[in-house]
Length: 311
Image (cartoon, rainbow, N blue to C red; front, side, top):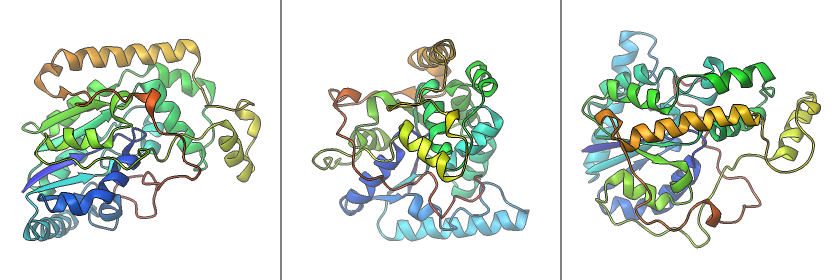
């Protein structure tokens, strides 16, 4: 059974993609494509896989995971798509380290050992100034204080970018097909992302009318309300409406330049480690995203069943 991992990253449309997959899962199953999303992976299935307490714990986790894989294969699944952004780590861990997914290499070495094989990894990347802004906004709604100016400056000068994350993945999975797509072109197209993930090996169901765009970054009023609920100082955030822009122009420019370097490296072949793909059916970029929903989408970034080893 072919195993495909969609690993996010966080804040790149993962919740929309997972919602889409849940809706079309029966049709995909009829084509031999199974789907495990966060509602499946965070119920103890990966307990002891990514951060085992002991060798015995690791063996038990591997046995449990292999039984689940065998069950999927027994149900006629020839390809299994596992989608969970917490496989990479967590936004809290990134903030603590002040870097993008610093433990990704170790985590995927353990994951590969547990699964037995990983044929393809699909990673969506996003310009770092937008990624950090979205991640910080998400964390503020979860009780984390807005970052001080010194922290924002350090983040803007951090040398670790997506190139380093991809290199760590390739080191952990030397024979795996690593496919990279850009948030800016695929976030509004979960159907296109499915085509990328499967390599065009299945018929891709159409999006529902109006599209899917869930779990968007909260705007300033929502962030101030989140601070007020915890008794924190709301003046740590700007007044007004619209999106939060914590980075200065100079800081944002540094982060965008780093992203441009990473994209250039990917477009030049990524030293043979990964391949960059664009929307196979262009024509719906961010300007054509569906209108905002009046209610928040399923929060797969922090739902109750956390992926084991992710803090």
